[in-house]
Amino acid sequence: MFDFLKIDISLSDIAKWLHSIFKLPYPKKTIKIINRDNSNWWSEGTKGNKPAMQVVGDWYLTNITDNEVLICRVEVNKPKTIGNIFVKHPKNDIYGNYVILPHCTTDARTDFWIQPLIREKGETYKTSVIFTDQFGNRYNVKNILFPSLKK
Image (cartoon, rainbow, N blue to C red; front, side):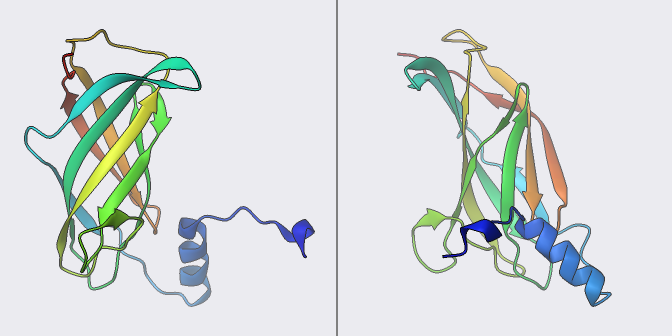
């Protein structure tokens, strides 16, 4: 009905705007992140009929605040690629775009599709993984290793 009113605003932008209007401080640090041992991998696949690397990692995310936290974006820096994050639901064994409850730890999985291939089968992919919360805080987890799944 109102197609001309399309607006491209992120949750991070909305949170910053609300905090500026009400002069509320927003937290500079909301989460702690730990990569789960032996859970990372990459494998060759295709995206749009072209070879690609699927890069997957599993994480523990701990909310260190008194508020719910939402991870809005995840990316790797070499090459810069925006991926997906699937956070475990607070009460059910399902994953998606869910908040992390205050003072709780939950599981999450990241998934990236990188084109073109930048590693050969058998090689390990090393990169930083950057998480961004709804307040715009960025968390750079450096030197994460993603071994190749051998086929």
